[in-house]
Image 1: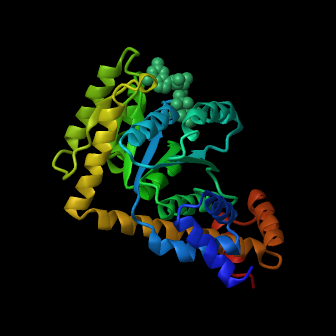
Image 2: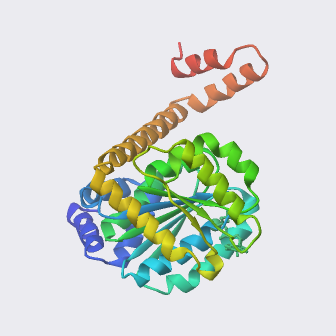
Image 3: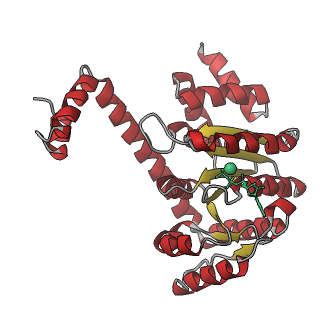
Amino acid sequence: MTRSDAATLEERLLAGDRRARARILTEVEVGSARGLEAMRVLYPKTGRAQTIGITGSPGAGKSTVTNALAKEYRARDRSVGIVAVDPSSPFTQGAILGDRVRMQELTADKGVFMRSLASRGSLGGLSEGSMDVILVLDAFGKDVILIETVGAGQDEVEIAGTAQTTLLINTPGMGDDIQAMKAGIMEIANVLAVNKADLPGADIVVSQLSALLSLASGAAWDPPIVKMIATEGEGIRETADACDRHHAYLLESGEMAAVERGRARRQIVALARTQLLSRLVQDSGGEERLGELVAAVAEREVDPHTAVERWLHPS
Ligand SMILES: Nc1nc2c(ncn2[C@@H]2O[C@H](COP(=O)(O)OP(=O)(O)OP(=O)(O)O)[C@@H](O)[C@H]2O)c(=O)[nH]1
Ligand SMILES: [Mg+2]
């Protein structure tokens, strides 16, 4: 591909061409040289989108909330991108299919674009492509980008560093989970939703959450708690308002700069880690050496630290 062709594709995307967007997304997701070139050209055009990460336990209603929020933002005349980071687990494939069906209604709307991604790259960690996909949608001009991830520890934290606002979906009957989350919850959630408020126990969760929050009072941003019934669209407007207020807070307080640096750092480190690991594996004999070391560690002939030393610095 020649350089002028390359420029055209990015220019077409920036001008709102959906086919150019599809091409670039595909290249970016597989991490091709063409995808890297597109990122180099497009990156300076990013940074305008409002990004909201939607996370929570499996089945909490993340997809339902994402869907309802997308509709709400469309009603506010804002274009929407949805990035659904699918868990790789085969157990959840039914749910993903369900999501697709629910999303069909939305995707008939040209103002909404949805992309599903595998959550794990080949070497672990949030798939390398997902941050780039968000950036491509940002460059394309999406006003709001909703990122759904299942709250499975590391992914949850990674996505919290990727999105400007993190919306944590809680549900009734998760009292024990809340106790377990205690440590992490303050750091990642900017808006707390209690979904399935049509089921008994929602108020208990609300008071547990506010008790947790009061321990951390004094912080500049006080995460609001919103009760919702996502399936009925109840509480969705309030949730969008809360997310918008957090976004405005980030801009007005100047905290957005720190959020951006955090995201940049996360992406650089994640990419470097992936590159270093894949170089190690691809190095001549790297994979074979790993096999030998695995056997030696399993047999307890070598400890794991020594094995890594030998892998990194073969004598
Ligand atoms: N009763 C009730 N059910 C709800 C509500 N919101 C979502 N659900 C149901 O909860 C189930 C899971 O909803 P999803 O939106 O797929 O949840 P999710 O968190 O995206 O699930 P995974 O992506 O599989 O982790 C579905 O059957 C929804 O219809 C609600 O407000 N009330
Ligand atoms: Mg889902």
